[in-house]
Length: 428
Image (tube, rainbow, N blue to C red; front, side, top):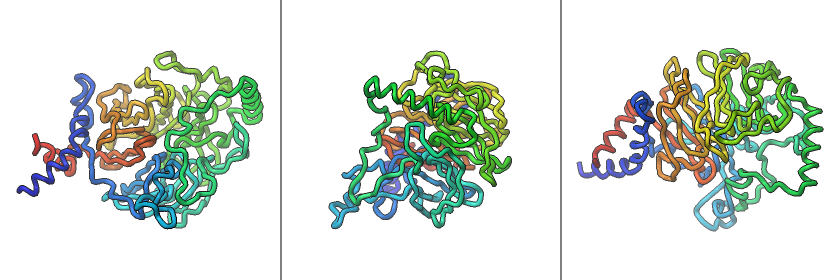
């Protein structure tokens, strides 16, 4: 019994913060909010001395196993000492960009590909990664087997080559770190600004908003095999929802903010201007993520404008949810997940800047609870970037910035959730 108590104390210390947060709601609505406990034993330590980078994609497959897209280039020199010959320290080694983890926390597969942003996996196990376009990978060989068409150049000059692709990797030599570039670079001289503006205008004239190909970078990918659709968030002009054929990868349809047809999306950046707490912009502001509900509604989270747009599969605008409207910097409305019940009563929204998971009533968009806060302990977040939910309602999260980790949260009423609850109560 003494041994069990000691184990219980250790686990309780690990889950205590999350236990409190899982019960933290908003006003009288808190009683209806989903309740979760962080699972401190998932995942298990990574093999081969890998040190994971910032998480830029998460997906759960048909077996409820988890696919994790990370940025190895986020790692700095001090984190790669084990790559040197001879090694300068026991840790660490750059990981592959794509890692497959089972429900028990074991790595069961991996492959390396150019870094990306956004991903999904189909029912046959093929992996789709957002890079400068969407590429379909064979998970066993790691080879590209198909890709969606894109224009052959970038708005800021140069040719596409895989978003986040690194120059030649030198053992023990890392990048500038996980926050480099997030807040943007200096504005430069007025002459440089004018040149950029002229270049952007020429590019947009050449590739209008109606262009039926990928033009910008990819923010998110969601596959709906029921309707033979792949939904892609293209970052061009603040964000375009693009739908492609699942089998042929041919373009089918697309829209912008408020369900506006692609041909009507403005190329004027003033229409994307937004001050936190102020009026909503006419167009999507930036960092658009998407997901599709069981009843065929498309939820497009415009993170930099702190809002979520709801449309039909054809792009007919239905309603707008605003969330944490005064949030600046990176915005609040990040990844979109759904509760596991058939009706998907709740939306689960990850917030990069405030480091919360919000639970929203899916019908009204009202917040009914939240979980997590800024911090480094289990159950807290530092750069909460990605969220995925499995068929049992387990929440998986991925962090960037100083977080650079995966976490798992189990429903409080599940068998594992009840065990963690009991162990935490042993110290009360």
